[in-house]
Amino acid sequence: MSRTSLPSWKALLSHADEIKQAHLNQLFDNDNLRFNKFSIKLSSLLLDYSKNLVTEETLAKLVTLAKECDVESWRDKMFSGERINSTEDRAVLHIALRNRDQHAILLDGENITDQVEDTLEKMRTFSLSIREGHWKGYSGKRITDVVNIGVGGSNLGPQMVTEALKQYSDNSLNVHYVSNVDGTQIAEVLRPLNPENVLFIISSKTFTTTETMTNANTARKWLVSSSFDDMAVEKHFVAVSANKENATEFGISEHNIFDMWDWVGGRFSLWSAIGLPIALDLGFDKFIELLEGAQELDQHFQNTPLAENAPVILALISVWNCTFLGAQSQAILPYDQSLHMLSAYMQQAEMESNGKSVTWDGVEVDYSTVPSIWGELGINGQHAFYQYLHQSNNVVPADFIGSVESVTPVKGHHETLMANFFAQTQALMNGVDEQQVREDLKAKGRTADYIDKVAPHKVHKGNRPTNTILMKRISPRTIGSLIALYEHKIFVQGIILQICSFDQWGVELGKGLANKIEAELCSGTINPAHDSSTKELINYYQSMKNVNP
Ligand code: F6P
Image (cartoon, rainbow, N blue to C red; front, side, top):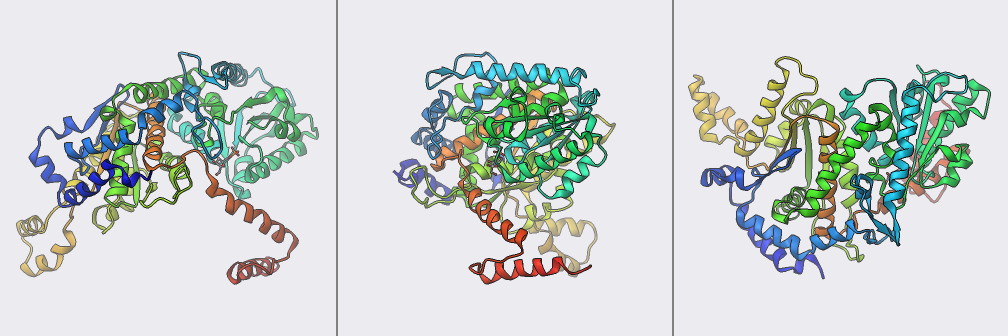
């Protein structure tokens, strides 16, 4: 049955028409308990969603929608290992990776907690031996630099977390990431490094991703050309993969392969051995704290009634803003330097999961699904695109994410940063009307002509919805909770929108075509069947290759 025929869906559609007439500042004027009603305090963070166009009636209707969509039973199916990734016939069990009380989780009769714990133990001993210098390279020297080669989920999660928790690293190792097949990146990363001290992690669930394999082969050549020894690969390469066969064929010793499982999706995999660079950088204990932070959120998600459940609320607010009120994009705006990769991470997490337009039954949806996700560090964004957030005729709901304390306090900076953090959501909500603009200009002694000319440009309509997420301070635990909060939000969004959030067929089409075109570029031929644009672009590329600059 289509979501649009649910009674709650219909009720929300007509409620949306009413609420479009309201203004957020009226809602606040009418109810001084708004913050209390529309915020959730967890041990690791505070979520304030009161600056959204919602009333108690909206919330009740949204929660009814969640109930009518069976969010609770889908959640329970996920936690109990049912194959809810229906198009790939797989379970979705990233929650099993942070099951710190180690309760049994059965998949096809097997307790996967044992496999998870074995891999964690392998990560613990490995990270210790690298960090303490017991593991030696081909010439007997210790490892000083780790290069993680992977893309998408095998890059964004670990790199985002490594960046977020930089201040927690003791710098016993330098951790680098290579994701792009543009040779510039790997060349730049390898240039200052000495092969004798480098450990490569080839991070690929499938061990077939072309870009990753190209980078892995380049890294292997770089090592072998300096060591003159194929055997060096064993001491300088490890893999994280579900495809042991390909990894061993590449030359990685079976002992140096860390398991991945088909019940972990790439974009939800940083909690697995895909997070090995995090453990190497921070030490294994801090990696465990990251998992514990995520588990706290898992427990909250599993045990809290829908109306007080932070990821459920975030998902409902997103569906409300996008599907019912028509917003088409969503900004992620961290006010914490350490979260500078968060929006890139969130793009994959949400858009690869829910950027789809057929239901899990293969029926085209007749509503808009998820927004496009974009963003930047708050302060930098303020001096770049916030103009658009305040005054364009597109409303962009935004998540503001900040910390009470800086991990790197520098006198006076944090207050300036956070003053902007609070001011922006207030300004986006309240705006400023023409009368106020005129009064302000008059008070400044401006002439009537000047006021007439400038006033329309200074009007801000406000009424722009925002969520605010405030953490005490960035730490492995709070980052774990923050990421898990968004993972579960995305899950609930998918359920409400009837989308299979765990496949990514949309990335296949371009990949397949690229393989064919690569053969043409390498052989200097052009397939005459291409459309005229593609044909002429390839023709231009090939002819310009032979022209001297
Ligand atoms: O972009 C498609 C994708 O399959 C992602 O879902 C995945 O995270 C990424 O490629 C990398 O895949 P792999 O880990 O198999 O190399």
